[in-house]
Length: 464
Image 1 (tube, rainbow, N blue to C red):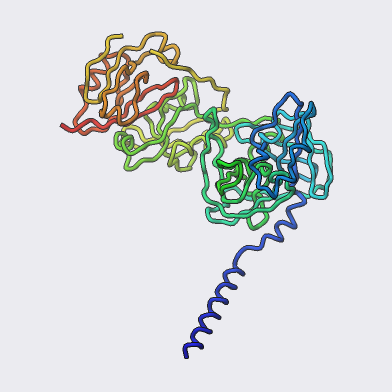
Image 2 (cartoon, one colour; image 1 turned 90 degrees about the vertical axis):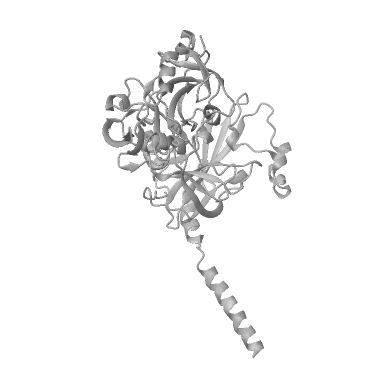
């Protein structure tokens, strides 16, 4: 009987394995239908200009079996134009093509190559640095195109597919799943207008600008960035979602530039201490740290200390979500904003403005205050400091006592304090009076300005 049971078990394992294999997605049809509309972008720069770092790669870091394809001896610069490459895809039959801004920005010439080896000179219609998208145009008709998926149709765990030219290996196909949605990756200038799709699809230099597909063969995103320590894929890649692609491409095609919604607030996340001090049941929303004068937010009545918990009907769980939502709203549109103020939910109406060019201020810094429960020694701010920070009045932190509530929340010398709780702080007198109102065990929000950036910190008053 034992041999029969063993045979039955073996058959069961084999059948289960075959069944599991048959349930895996087959990408062949998507590739056959979509590859003709995916293109390779070849970019040249004058010899005195560097190609973008994002598409450059280190020959020595390549695996041995790839090095022969990219022998540096066969690619001399010697005064010749420098080059880089990326990927893209055809959006319309008359030759509009989508790729990344960083692939073509600053290029002297752009060539689009199809999988059948046809090549066309491309004109840059428009660039958008904040979304990292670019729109190109070639003179051609009846081109194969790719359909864009409906916004918000993608889900975490869903299979996705990428086609591109990693390391110049033309029209390579990789697949994986959606790892997360709405990832915030602020730029060096702290702009944050793209809720990135995170995937584990193998994306490498040369894939940038190429399409990310769902199993219906629709474009759900444009591959843009990877997280890597080696220069190659480690399973953390990021794509611009189709909702952003649609909006940006339409505006680039219509006018060559992109207008984004603008609220006019500085915001930060709400942690446990701040949630308690602002009367929230849990950490959520975007805490308004500062309101720009004459901005849409100021006109709508938003004030520092408001916690924005919804915008245009969409729940705001973290501060990073707010720029994503606001940026997609057409300037001039009136929307509802839900805020928590003094522990109560209120609804305001704001007319969204257009994102302006922004400049940022700086920091610097007389009788210091006495020691206190918060562990802050402060002094009145000099006029030079106030001018540099764009403030009318404040006290400046001169010293932070070790193991104090202020030290625990990362307040440092040089920070300018402008509010404690709901009390504006203009001088040391205001500071001392605000401290006298504190109760043991109370959580209190402290508004400060650090090197031109306003922020809140939630301090817990020690229990006696």
